[in-house]
Length: 410
Image (cartoon, rainbow, N blue to C red; front, side):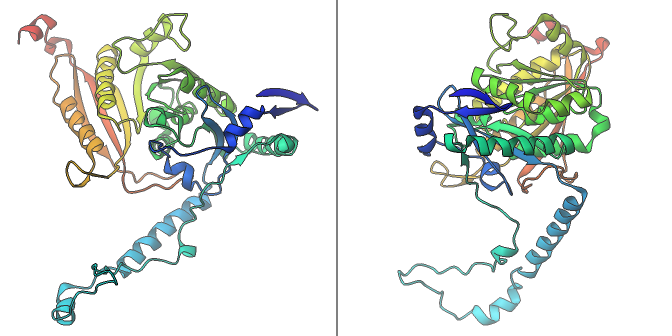
């Protein structure tokens, strides 16, 4: 892919190989696709390039809801609750009289014919348009670029969208390159509590596309947006640049940094891209008071690494720290249990309990679930299975701290 400029506008010229790859997008058996990208209302996902591992990369616009739209969503939620009450099953006493002696209904194959609860007319339900990506072609470049320039001017003027570069279907190990509902609900929480985060020094773990860090940077003094993988961190840095007008106007600062949960230290090697400086390490140890994590607990090994990283960071922080973790409960049918289960969520809960029970003489941990009743600021589908958890880590007073030598012998 080459970049040319004509009449002060940038034009993307894709090679024959790039265009062929873009036109032959296929979903493999191990591909994972976020619902955000499938059902984002009125979304325009524009493919812009292939990343270093050959995955198509898109830029999407996530809209901030106006006050009228927020009210409309509240009214819609009330209507849905009313409709669900209308279609509740009849009382058992009413059913016994009519169904006691009736034979069960069978279909033509002899299987039980289950009567489902009536559903609303699809045209009356919330708009969930399946995304049809717009693929750049050389003949369309000038027209599309003019349109994008016009849109960008409006975006920067009204600040009603956040632009995010992402992929749309990846193997499990690359899901951080997509946008997930957990990041959006955590962003909503941040926007609903501006005084809580004003002027804070913040570390986000497993930041992925960087959306939550960008939102936080409109309130906090400094955000360390961390993850692992050169390609992912590069994408994160580009997203910071795409939205720097929002960050700079608020006086915030975002630093994209490498933080591997499976390592016990922060990389300070100056030859490694996105490594830490000694000053930055000192900054988070002395000043960080907030840790964020959005939907990062989907694999047991990574979840264990995540909680070990939390523990190490909090033990090194000079101050108390509030940790906010969003998670989406995902149910799967497993052959091992022959039932629907939520193993990743159950392991997350187990790790939370273990953290709360820690007695190491250094920090104490308190865990609570926060209600997701705060206003919705961004346009997405906030489902019931989204949860938000708060962990408060406090330094144990010096006179109550157990010396490490005693810990080793106890």
